[in-house]
Amino acid sequence: MSDKRIYLYDCTLRDGAQTQGVDFSAADKNAIAGDLDRLGVDYVEG
Image (cartoon, rainbow, N blue to C red):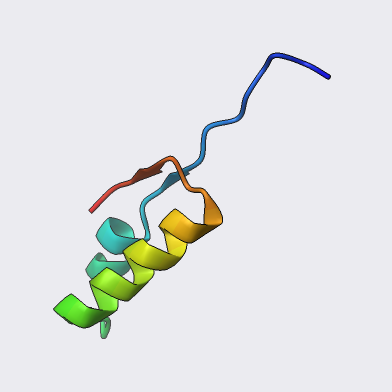
């Protein structure tokens, strides 16, 4: 097994919110961030 690690970076909350017709509520943002955390994403850009 290698000592190398892949770090996951997600920009859904930033880039997704810039998409026309998309408007995340506070509850949506909280749910998305929670799901990304449970999936093991290392960094969530918001």
